[in-house]
Length: 338
Image 1 (cartoon, rainbow, N blue to C red):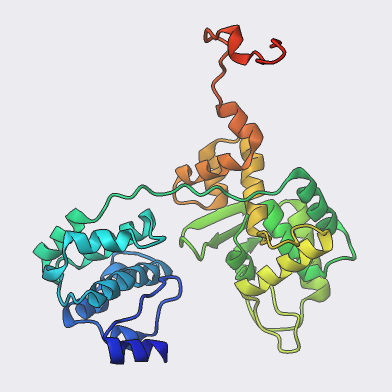
Image 2: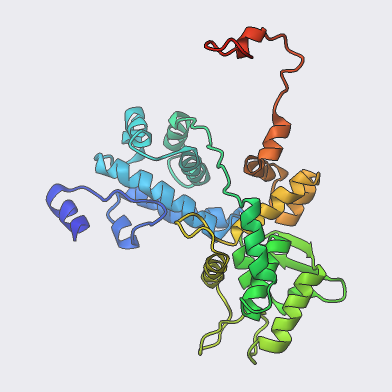
């Protein structure tokens, strides 16, 4: 009602959070030229190979930008000024990723819209550096607490235990664990080979005995009789394949049984994925090998895990041993001691 009232009385369009995009009916209020860009983008982006989820995110970010311009009274790209763009990117938490998404949408739509005006806007979009996320990580004591629960025989169901063991020893994402199929498990080669839901890239991970035994026990002793190629099924009365959200529910139970992270901190199975990558780094594995195991598109993605380990950061430090430093630099002013 607030959105309708603001538009009816004040003539303002809503400000949208791209992570929670508004309904399509709201975007129908956009000026024709802006609306045309939204409608043209999806088929162009999908045709050049972007994932549907990526296209949805890029489109939502560009839509928020267009809604802001429409609120300023701009009815076409020609009317958008440099001051308008500067005001948009200084209004709040809008970073380098959003700027990059908007630029990508405008570049893709140049062939079908007013290319010269889009090119002008692309040139004046700010160059905002991309922020490097500091990955959350598990401490040694937390890993031990989780491992004690996972490897116990009586604290988790066979299904939940298999899910957690897969996350701990293979580094697979929650959605890929939920979607794991019988056809993706090669029992003869002790290997799991699947197409990742996030990147659509093929990843192969070795199936060590702990993983294979956990899967076998679940399939033969607990899995309901249900005609589906999906390995993991729900434990409810209405049996169906698991979804990614239900894998997260498994992780919540795991952390509760382990007695850790009950204070609101992150507690998904993705932390086990981070831990596996960090462990491989600490053991000296090549970054390209870790990237292949994790299923990353680029080996550079592994660099974000460097911040998760004090030991790895310590290795990056430059020693001052060979630099001339006056002894008084580290002298206590009160005691005169070094």
